[in-house]
Image (cartoon, rainbow, N blue to C red):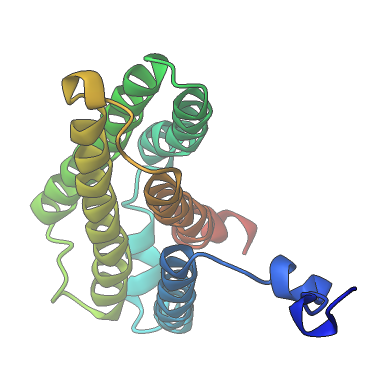
Length: 203
């Protein structure tokens, strides 16, 4: 005889569809909060771009071509990280290779930003010079800090992958969280590069 009490209660479809790993959810919320902060920095830059006379002139000190080349390296790193994720899912040793390429591309971008900063400082364009300098260095420097944090996370993931027979010990969730952060950093730079380096050409 069928016992109604032993029957499982029907599961609402939303109960399964809405289940999100807490780590991924935490990273998504963190990215959302950082997105708001970056938006405020970009708005501050736009607000002061044409003020105080020297702002528009100072913007022409920026080397769009050189920064564009370094930016391509950062954008390409999102693709190589995606390849690393795909290789990791297949338990392929190529995951390590693509992770190395990703870190190298990110490092090229940071090196390029450091070279740019050095050149601007030599031209007396510093964070304390005027509102343009303050907003420029704050916005791009804050993004650069996020890139460095991302490189640290990628390096940790790479270290776990290279632990001999445990090279695939890093979980899919862990790699997904690192990937989410890195792709976020890349997307933010699309906005920053467009506003800081390209905006003046369409004014």
